[in-house]
Image (cartoon, rainbow, N blue to C red; front, side, top):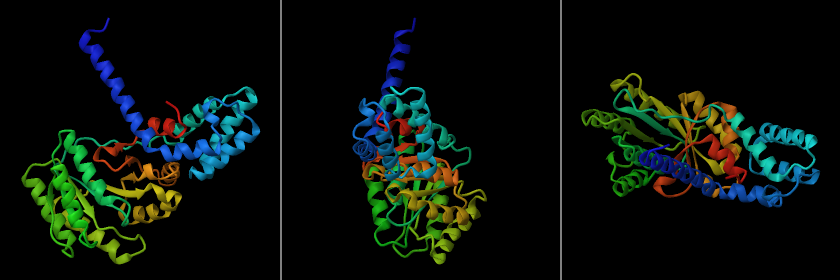
Length: 321
């Protein structure tokens, strides 16, 4: 029989798991609602038929799951339907979630505590992806986990980007190294690494300038930041994450490919999933690039940046508990 303390821990653990799942479900509301609308409440208890399968196919394409994933989900549901013509919508949802979990195997990025300090995360992406905001939210999350963090305001190219990160740093009580708009971003990165090292901090998160992947001069600036960081630590930046706007859907795949070729991405952060009905794009991005997804953005609040969970995502998009 479990001791009272052990029982409390189990209850707390279950509550935490439920809370995390609720974050995913709430954050993916628009995607869930779009699928439900196109399938006329199929997963609410309706019996499967040919018409509902056609509706589901259209819904999955609209949610940007792509041809491969949509085909796999439909084929498995059709196979189950042929075996059991009384198949219910909820059973189809369970099948769909299981297919997503299989397709996304290996997609969860796990960020271990660093064995080299400071460990550097370079945040990369185009303007408007939520990169600067995500930098602050990530620092806040690591700090909440008991780790020490410095953020570097290296987006000196975009007007007001430095002030934006400073504002977040004040709001969340973060340590920041910054200069002025137009300053040498690589010099800021160098100074931030030195500051993080001297203060014995665990992490340095570098907010790089938002850039179009087609602009070679801006891509070279990104490479310069990397070279300057490597003067301090040849392995830096240990993590190179692309921040992708989830509302762009599959259109972000080509962008991610170019950044990966130029900079060797080690991870992805997918933002703004709460504001789009195209939440299936995560699957296509992972299938194309096989780069782990570390975090997803499910809202505007600092705690709405959540570690990516394959199970929570797969069940949430099909409206399952």
